[in-house]
Amino acid sequence: MIMNSINLSKTICLSGRDELYLVNLDLVLYMQADDHYTHIYYTTNHHFLVPYGLSAIEQMIRDMKDDSVPLMRLGRKYIINLQCIHYVSILKGSVSLSDLHGGVVVLHISKPILRSMSSLFLSK
Image (cartoon, rainbow, N blue to C red; front, side):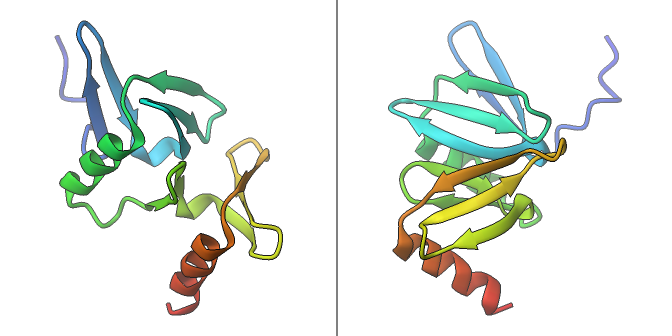
C-alpha cells in the first residue's frame, strides 16, 4: 500500500461506525448544519453529508491549530471558506461565495453576524 503520496495535513478524518470521511479543508466552500448532520460543499461542486454536527467539526478544525485554514463559523448554521467570499451585503443579510467553476452560492446570514465578520476584514 502506497501512502507516501497522500497529504493529510489539512484534512480532518471523521470516523463513524463502519465509515471514514476524509474532509479536505482546502476544498471546502462551506458547511451547513442539518440537525446532527452536516452538509459539506466543496469548491469543485461536490457535496456530501456527514453524520456529525457542525460544532463537532468546528472543534476538530480548532484542534488542528493551523492558522492557515481559512474557515470561519457564521452563526449556528454555517462554516464558510473566507477565501471564497466575493460579496457581503449587510443590508440584504447575505454573503456570496464563488466556487472553482464560476458558480455563486448566496447564503443568508443574520445582520449582526455579518457586521462582526465585516469588521474583521476592515481591521486588517
